[in-house]
Image (cartoon, rainbow, N blue to C red; front, side, top):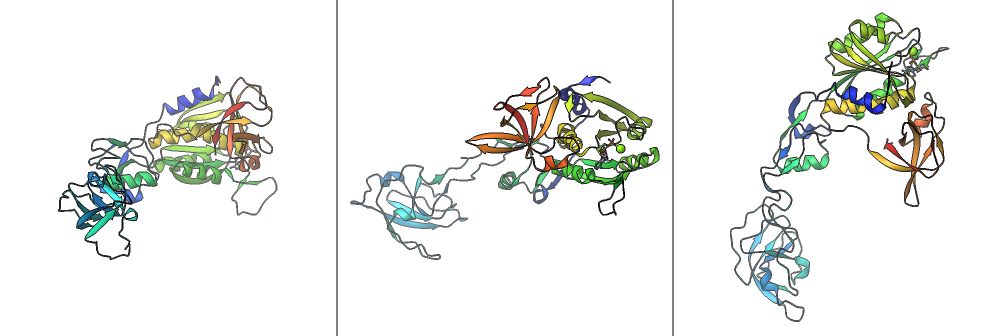
Length: 410
Ligand code: AMP
Ligand code: MG
């Protein structure tokens, strides 16, 4: 078993994955999905010059000499609500009442807000006045949202690999996309293994523990927006493990994830089963927490075997599986957001790349990190109390208090 850096191991895994196929889905169901093509605008946004205020459209030049002591009076020749294309063209000395979002009439190049006129009737349904007075000059373009201000037809507005969020759904609608081309959701099968595992509602028995990894890992997979197929718990026997893996393969999943049963214990059958019908790489990765990492394929379905200890399973997911599901999903970089934080106290490490549970809080404008609870790989509470994973680089044995390190925000 060779010693791999985290980066090498991750790169080797990622090189084996391609994005899943694409599909066209309704925009209403596209939240959190990943665009599989650039979105090129067919139209300008805004579509036409329009008013950003309720007020009066005018020629800015007409307002040049307006002042409180010498108001300018304009003839109101039209009333333009939103949604109605104006048919008139403003001549000098003329104005048109206009509503927010309504199209500017020909000849107009600015809008004076109703608040800056003598027209005080703001009631719904009120008729436009025949004249309006303004008492200060308006600049050309003031309160006008010009056609193409945001987007020009032909612009690439959204990029392949971008996740659709509420804002992007809004702009897709502006651009006329009732349906959108996205990557399918990757399908990920998940199972736990171990004779000691009980379903969470089963009566406790001595020597047994509840299967918590299934729940934590299913939630992690769902947080990537992949579909999770929970296969339950395999016993520590060849046949039991094989049955679940065959089930996963039968369901056409893109990836199988397991926890436990992949170390060197006498009852660790997962390796053997994968090897019997595929290939398994077993790497020693220079990381902490870090058992060997199992990566291979059963028949042609990729498999990643995570450690059994809950914190190790979580960290293994974050370090290797999140980016892998990201690659399957069509995302350029699927990892967590990384930030720089200052260590509150000295941190000792053993030279392996270490992922430590910490809580980050702001102190005098600086993000300061403090380790939580017991940092053992079975101590899940320290992870529950954490909002970040500190990343202590390989080769570092001591991080002095006050030094900055990278951290993933959880
Ligand atoms: P193993 O990799 O099978 O040697 O398991 C390592 C440790 O993780 C042992 O303490 C197991 O009891 C624990 N463990 C394994 N699977 C789970 C699970 N699904 N939920 C919680 N703890 C687990
Ligand atoms: Mg076990």
